[in-house]
Length: 416
Image (cartoon, rainbow, N blue to C red; front, side, top):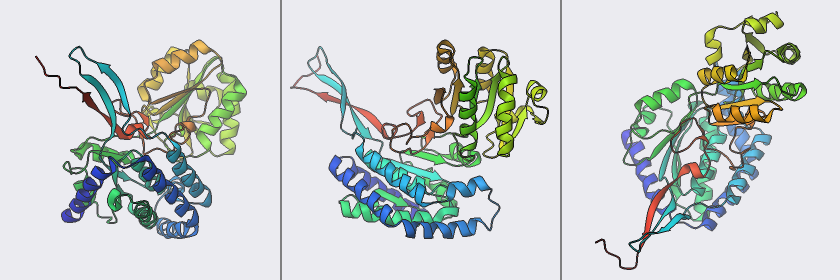
């Protein structure tokens, strides 16, 4: 097993050196070929995915997990659109910035360069295979992809299409490699392969990410969970608030940008809460609320402290009524996982105070938390969402997969 993963790492490193100086046209040609191939092979992709779903439905996976691993014509079309959006993005590699002439005569600047080799470990979502490959190649990186065993057939077939597109476009065949072994020992080796891998990006459940973060000897770009909040301010437009909260929670239950915690101003709670409760009740969403919330909606379950920390990924939501914007900010900063938070307000000063004070990777005013996504942010796609504060934060697109190096231009200067 060690020899298997070592060969993959060595091939990735070799491919990364070639990728660092390929042309924009070569990279864009690969992306065009890949989008066309995926579009033309929709039926075979869905057939491979159906084999995974058949096995998954025999297990104990919940509906949200099954939803995340399911490929349909609609999300295959989104996959293709994401690839083409990445193609149309500016190629950052080789871009020179911060050019300065020094008193010595030398010119100092910085150049945008690839990170090198990325190790990607993820669960359930086969679309991650394609999004990650597209972004990595556009950013000049080689990537090693290790998806979950539950989507092995989907990932192997998508990997085949990616390899064919690499070969047809003249890029290194090993620039994108799918680890086809489902042995967990492969992950243990991958996250310690410092000589070949420059960064690890995990996407999956909290336990997976905690394990990788605790064991990796390579830098990790991560987020542990998505306990996203919305604060309905006293100055909120009620109709707008109901619509945004409904969409944030119920559009998809099993995503990291789904609303999990609702915070409501006491000055608007008696008008707002019954309306949102009616919608949630119709959609079988269980509210777990504080004493003030239960005082307004007697049918709900009382919340315990752990509810306010919870990423449910299911038909549950916590709710608390607060007396001020400051109290809302303090509550969110205490319980948030630092992913995405939003305020619903018509008061510009309150909105600006909220976005300054909230310590999360995405903060919104009057918009659904479901927009916290690389595609929606215009990044083409995302390789993950980072709640770290160093290097990359929020949806990680092209720029998050690059680094900077210093470049010096001289004309024979020597240091005195």
